[in-house]
Image 1: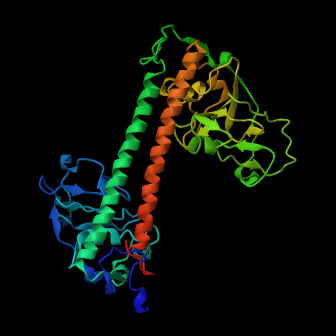
Image 2: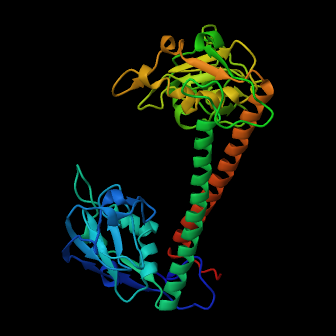
Image 3: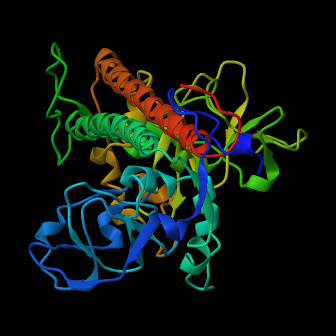
Length: 419
């Protein structure tokens, strides 16, 4: 490699030395000292670490089981070599026993945080993915240890890189916590703003409303529309005359309100497809997923923003049209709340694949405030909350993309750019 390529694409000011090449085994000491976990050395196992984040998801000091593993010390790096790779873990003030398929690595004459982030870079991941084994592939130390990497000769530059990425990680964690709080607020409000357990008023209500809520059977509130059984193979995202809502998208991609204008909905590939036996949807219609791999069966989306689009309901869906006018957003959030969805749990059939039938839905109870203004305020409240969640999610994703770019450009060889 030419001399001018032995530097990263992005570099901090004040550092200009060419980076040196060293095999990974020269950077770390792989520990294999066995120890038994105890109150001072708690055991750390795969399920105790949040994959890819390098943080604990529980208080492992409360664990009482006695297990044997490899002892690790503060600033050691743990790498989960068994797929799916947990990638890394490093705490400056924590000792314990790593139980399971971990490499415990102690930095050797390099900055510990630099090592921590080096193993997250694409080149290291490529080396680690040269795995052995078939049924249970795992990273091969004999290959990884001999893989060469470039690193700064100056320990201060190593530390600067590690500190910068750690600051970025801290920001990501902070915004992830904010995102989790918003999601928890939404979950709590979905439980408290709709009546349940036979009550005719919700636990939390907007001021100015006091009347008891109406209760009707599903069969009195909705009429069924016709869907189709087109598979993914019959759909495309490029062009077409009719958009088709697939149940998989209702379960995974679409929220309580499906804005046809903003959402990415596939077209039916065959433009000559007859919509004779499939109902065209209108704003306010509801699409219910009638199959899933778990208890999410029954998840639904309320249609909004139809405008000039032609939209139909596809495979494994139950499209419904309310027999009375509801304020926009109310049905989407109510039907996905525990107040309604809990009624579906005893009606679900199947083992590997869970499903619910049209007939099973008919006798479920639908509750709603008679005032459309109250319905509207409920719908607007949850849509505003969803907007906040979306904005926070974008902040997290932007920071994650920034970290990914830094891992690629602050380690990968290429033209140097000073920061």
